[in-house]
Image (cartoon, rainbow, N blue to C red; front, side):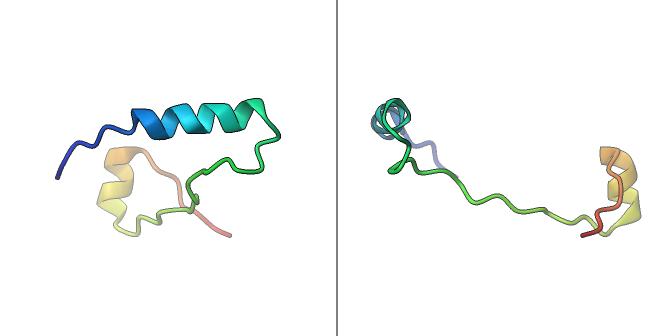
Length: 50
């Protein structure tokens, strides 16, 4: 594990927000399915269905 200074990246992304966001870099989001019922209960998760 490491810590990375992304201040320069954030500054560049802030500039992209001020424009038309065409160059804005965002993470791809996806559902992380938790199948273990004990873990679901501990995290208070509901079942995910697509």
